[in-house]
Length: 378
Image (tube, rainbow, N blue to C red; front, side, top):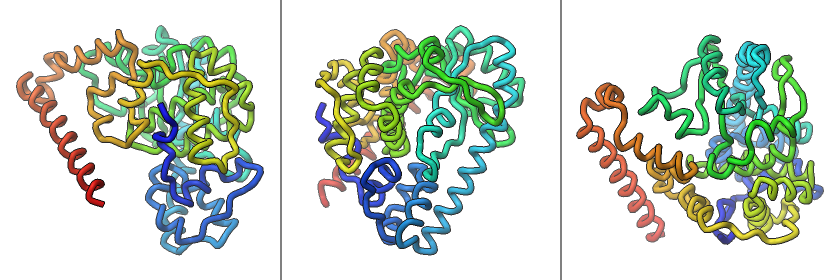
């Protein structure tokens, strides 16, 4: 799969500058206020408002309306970051008391590898635990006042068999993501909690001692998160910044060794080549050898949206591209025939439920056809 068709193509000047800000030996020129204004929506959507404020301060500044937007978002981000850590303290202590191995895999783990003065915002705490401990940890979260972010799944076993984990929210704004596999599951299957614990170091979240995933595994997770972002319709620019920061920290040789151990040499090859082609300013070295992307992985990448931002990649059925074959089969079967009580609660009958699936697919496909025709007319 050619990096020329990757998600970094066609980035505008402010987005490029934000991706590499503080992460290269030769800084890019700071974009002017007009560039930040024109890209304000992308900057906001991609969670880069704090970086934009820091970068604009080194140049000509921002237009008042752009400053107001980005300053407000930065303040909100800081509040969410503090809330996430504070809300998680009780659960983190309880997990440790129960002797459950858990590793913080994003947020605070990757923040420490970004250079001082260049904030890396996060709004939740992501924990990786073993599948055998998953429900115990989720139950502890519920006892601490957290609630599931979405309604109950079609079958009780869905969260463990057909999803990588669950997102749960606290009343005070804190968010916890409990994972039993690194998403997307089909690619992160070899990075289990035992491997993550072995490579972790001790740190703290809001004063509570925790295991933080090590830099090499953190780079694997950031690269996988780009795929997760694309499937959700995002460019994943914050994840790309993580990749640049981590590559700068550990170097390409250690990165290559780790990815090959995870049987993901092709992913590192794909990511570094995309950066080299579309963002040469990042000064990213490529791998020592070329790793061919397996055919099945190529198909999964296409479904997740690596080559194009297509709404079709976010159809419910394409979720199976994230899952290993047994779990994908269970997902399709469980969605095709959900639990009777679940259907009755939401749709009233199976006929109405299946009709809603058809309507969802037709609407998505119709919207994509309209988008493509609009692009052709430009």
